[in-house]
Image 1 (tube, rainbow, N blue to C red):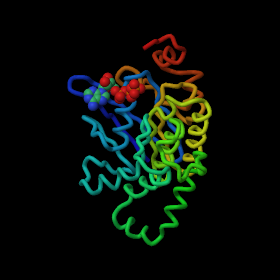
Image 2 (cartoon, helix red, strand yellow):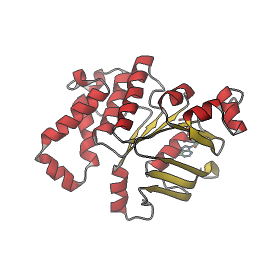
Image 3 (spheres, rainbow, N blue to C red):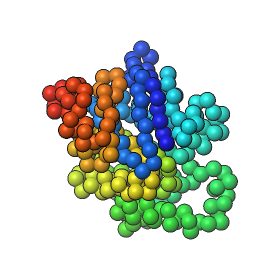
Image 4 (tube, rainbow, N blue to C red):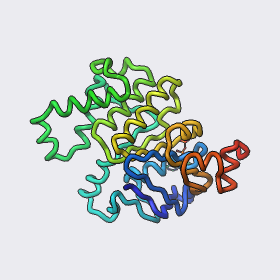
Length: 250
Ligand SMILES: Nc1ncnc2c1ncn2[C@@H]1O[C@H](COP(=O)(O)OP(=O)(O)OP(=O)(O)O)[C@@H](O)[C@H]1O
């Protein structure tokens, strides 16, 4: 469904990755693992169709946003949701924050139509808060939430508008085991709904728990991508093996 083929990206003279290929299908969970600073966020922003690759192509259902006109690119972008490492919520209640995702992601015609079916929006807000176990906080101001709860609200906001693809950038890096488990269960729920999920994480155990396939990003590209068990138990690439066994320290 979402596919990047042969993509390269640099910042000035610094190449982040070169000739990288990755895809995610509907309902599939792909983990991107790699050390800090290797380019996981840059890759996710490329997949979010917000960062244009220097070379190569990114396509959503066969359409390249970078050769499409701006209006079409916006429509494609709306189908991809991203949850950042740090929850970026605005002052207001939990419900307002989750609902905001629904409003900004809709086209004008959908927004006008939605004025007549506000109950649909309320259902989407409730359902996505239910997925992250926060229905009891619906009317609470977000500045009264813990860091873990705030991150769960961010996830719910992205889930509420039912994207085709959900990109998660280190979604649990600062969270305790309980909040981590809630987010990991929510990843499973998103995939059950047919959403393709890409999770960037430096936590290999998390990748093992949630992913159908794992892509290993080392140095300036993906050394290996394959089914999770295969990557962890029998990697084909020597660098992957060293990284996974902890022999290769970054
Ligand atoms: N806007 C930018 N301008 C210049 N360099 C950048 C920019 N964004 C990222 N970089 C550099 O690109 C490289 C990859 O960064 P990126 O944030 O994609 O890595 P990461 O794997 O997500 O790291 P982390 O796990 O620590 O968040 C780093 O060396 C970073 O300093």
